[in-house]
Image 1 (cartoon, one colour):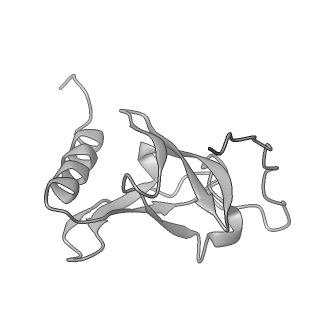
Image 2 (cartoon, one colour; image 1 turned 180 degrees about the vertical axis):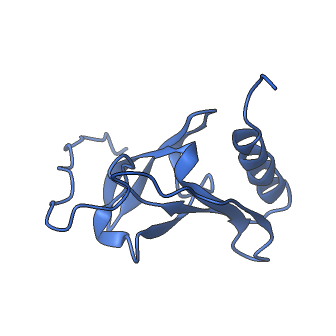
Length: 127
């Protein structure tokens, strides 16, 4: 069977359902070396992220990846999450959503002693 995978479409559908119903969409991600998230917030190889409009900037729910900027401890960070690493998307308020099987792949473990990637400084005009 040819065509696109359903997972990115299901993620977008649950995101829309959450926002249409005034709920906060959260993303559960199985982190690996190809996932760009703040490593210091990863617990047991997983991170849960608020992807609601008030918590993100420039959110793109693409077919291959999810990208956005979010603040952690007041510092803006760029997120890049391959769709294959998304373990679930759900409402914070109700817990309703969809969860996916995430395949463990070669090199999916996080390096033990690798420091988090550097944060690029940004200037913002405040009016």
